[in-house]
Image 1 (cartoon, rainbow, N blue to C red):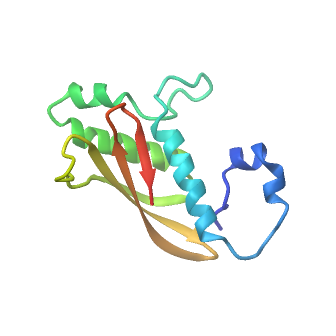
Image 2 (cartoon, rainbow, N blue to C red; image 1 turned 120 degrees about the vertical axis):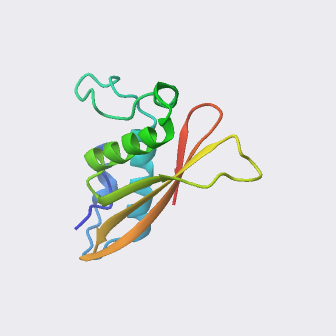
Length: 139
């Protein structure tokens, strides 16, 4: 069964875990996953001495390193999520269609399975790279 809160969230706020339930709060679980994905995708590999592989490479470096930079970036994001967000399985990342109203931003779609209450369900997150280079995640 997937935990609603990540380990870091439980350590930071132990009082939030005082109510135990046999039923998973899907909204709480989704918010926790979104928060963890934003932390993960806005961390750069090599920045954590204890886990140098945590995060993704610089978006600019990946995009400019090869002619297939967008596909490489999708692969890097997918690999990082698969490694560091254990509540998600069968992760797939693909480039989302550009927004006609705002074609300057990159958007990615993250599809994955999440197990809640013994049931597996497919979840979808949208990730958007803004002008500051920050990846925002929403469900």
